[in-house]
Image (cartoon, rainbow, N blue to C red; front, side, top):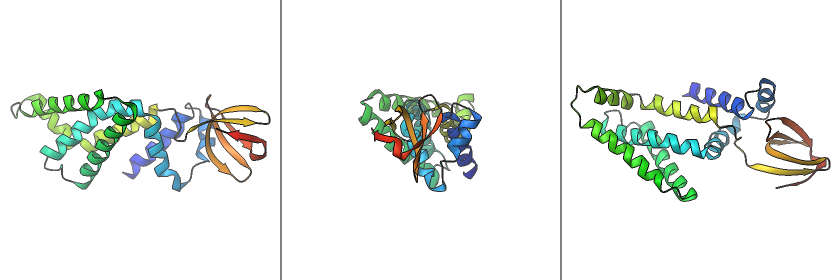
Amino acid sequence: MAAVGFVFLILRIFAVSGYDWETAFAVSTTLSLSDGLALVFGSLMAGHVLVQILLIIVLPLLIATFLWSSSGHRATVLLATTLGSVTLIALTVSFKIWWLPLATAAVFGVFALTRALPVKHWLRRGFGVAMAGVGGVTAVAVLIVAAFIQTPWVPHEAIMTTHGPVSGYVLSVDSGYLNVLTDEHEFVILNSSDVISRK
């Protein structure tokens, strides 16, 4: 789990930096150990479209594992299933995407039909392997989000300075200056005394 978290962090830093080495290095200096939860949660919020797509596949597999697999009642499976369900509800209500739960239910229906096949059928065997490796499937889904969402984990801001406007993401605020990642994936440092407003 720690290895997945480390890879997630590295992928997020590179993704938001446009996979530019120097920018990624600058972005990494703005993070601390206490930023972990905000980074994960903010990344999922920023990449909600990709999260929707992955959720349609991963959540039914988690539910199927919980219901039908001998390892389904492990705390990690239950926690992931609960988190996925809450995410599904939040996305549906927030963005009025009522097709999302229907698509998720449809995929679960396909899984149920697959389970009804003879035990030796290749589809059912493959489904059994997927349920047994549900942790790996979930980890891969999370890493896909980390690698492909280039929006940072903080809200977008329009910053007016004495030198003109800056549009981007304030990654951290230190004594006397702001670390900002611009919309063009450039890392800039603004003096707090030059900032007129932030919206």
